[in-house]
Length: 400
Image 1 (spheres, rainbow, N blue to C red):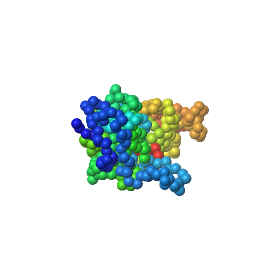
Image 2 (cartoon, helix red, strand yellow):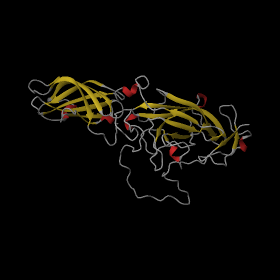
Image 3 (spheres, rainbow, N blue to C red):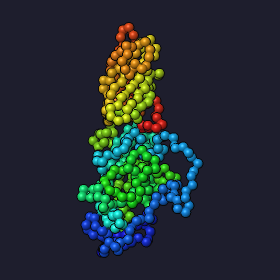
Image 4 (cartoon, rainbow, N blue to C red):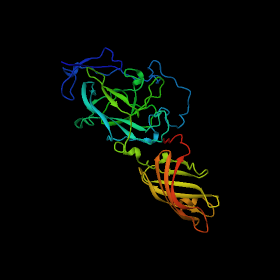
């Protein structure tokens, strides 16, 4: 009879011997329920050096000295552009995938031990790739977010009587090998977090998608998940080998990752100042207003009239969430001074023409225009296309 032992993180002795069956989800014990102790692994996140340790009842943790929260900023240990995705993560894989069937340790509320085989799938989401050399992408290649999904079989989905528990997930890349504390990676159910994680042995009631992240703790490994790496999914059961998936470097093509070459959705990550390097002093300020439902795009184009005097053109249009392009947005100009008239009715608000916007990546805007002022105003006019670049990256809504 094959023996299975539930192990601690250190895979130490002292676990309880259990027997297995060919059934995909059956008690691991050969005898009755009463003979099976409550099997809870002793694993804790000691693999993340520097992480706060849990205090005991005898030695309660004392308060620190900070009375204020952190300053809003992009996660310094991020593994992808913060603008790549937001909650919720997708529940369906796309593009190239890597998957395997993995038997996981399972239990019920009374501690009775089982196994349940799930499907683990890894895939990538295309992100904006501006070509900059960043910590998570030191070569300036294409950026991606790497996702892991664990799917329960249909007949077990949502079952809270018996549930599998989250495996130990580690990675190997460069000089970081399996079996070291640095190989433990942070697996989170929500993107753009700093310390959130899915703990080893936590229950998996329903199928879920996770994003691969880095720990912010001293001594933890740092992985560039857009490069090639190996991912190990370990149920920590004696006699059950961990599953290792070899994930190649992210090298998108139009066929494999069409989103890598598509315009970006118009949203607040694109707020900021844009300028034309070939025409010093000319630029555009773009803002996206609204959070739920339809949104408003406002653009102020700082240009010049035929005499070289500064002249403002303003544009405003309504967009839907996820919209990737804005075609023929109305453009106006003001006579007699003023600014608020750009947002509403005004005798001084004149129709100039139209503008179309597309953002190839976070640091590039392509736009076309067609219009002119009336003869009395004698302002700028014409048609054409322009490619401008971002003047600076915002410190919070970071788009890279």
